[in-house]
Structures are given as structure tokens and as C-alpha cells.
Image (cartoon, rainbow, N blue to C red; front, side, top):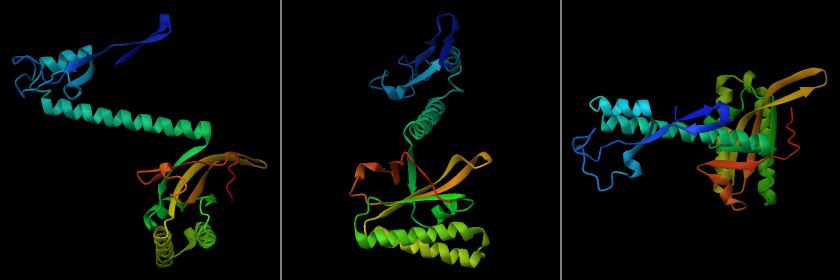
Length: 231
């Protein structure tokens, strides 16, 4: 624990200590393992509480250079993932912003389509008339697939998915990319209490319109304020 709550002052205070992985002293913990030009460089530092600081320095044969670096790397990954998850949840709740994965073929479709209760399709960035018609027809096929997915025999399902995959490849050749996500949203209908529903969301996107919206094969997009999926 690197931060503690101080109830009397209604504030947090930091108890973490900046510790050397390799001691600048040759006879210090892990000292002499490697000659460093700068012992205070970030690569040679790790943040620990006072108890763990003493523990790793008292038992350097157990807490070796390799082990401490691995602990530090794993913790950094955990923090990065936690921050990214928190940011995504904040964006969704505050601004109706979603991050969608690129759909390249049947593997992604198998993640989104099954057990979907509703669907939402959008392709407003596509200005070419012919392409927009082809995309709308493609989304009609996806809608039909959502409706019959659980009833299809394995061979027919595979044929349907491969057909969708071929269409996606053709769109990619034309410069259009497809993104999607199976989103969980809460809705209530008539006398039915509020419940969670899976919304199969697909976006046909022209990268030339807003290239900065795509990063690492993911599309960050603001959904309409009156986001209204179909059943």
C-alpha cells in the first residue's frame, strides 16, 4: 500500500518510497551486479512501501535484480490496464463514447452476433453512393444473421460467416473499415422492468474522414445522444 487515508484531516498521504533496484554501493543490495552510469535513472527505481523496501534490501538473494524488474513490469501493466479501463468507463458514462474493435472476419463476428437482443448500424462517414448501398445491404445480412444465428446448422453458419468475411475484405479494398462491439445496455419496455440487453453494434467507417479516430485497430466514436438500437 503506497497511499493511506488520513481520516482526521480527510486527506491521503503517500507512504511509498523510491528505492534503488541496484544499489549505488558495491556492497549494497544487488550492488556490483551491473555498473550503471546513472543509478537514479527510472529504469533502476521501484516504488515500495517502507516494509517492502527493507524486505528486498535484507534479502537481496531472494529479491534479485531479475525478479524486481519483473515485479515492476507486471505492476506497470496492471496500472496501465486499470487506467485504460477506468477511462473507457468514464467516457462511456459521461459522453456516450465507445471504443470498437475492427472486424476482420468470422472470428470477430462470432464474438458479437450470438445472443444479441438488439442491433445498431451506422455508416454516415461513407459518402460514396454505391459503397453506402453495399454497406447497408451488408448490415441487412448481419441483421438477418442475428435473427437466425442459433437456428443455423454448423455448415450453414460457417458458409454465412465466410460470406460476410468476403464482403468485409471487399470493403477493405475500397478503403472502408468495419468496426463493432457487443455492448451491454440497460433498457425497460412497457411493463417489463429494466434489464440488461446485448446490442450488436457495427460501424462502417471511412478512415479518410477522421483518421485520428482509429488507433491500434480500434475506433473511438461518439454514439448519438439519442442512441436507439433496433430489436
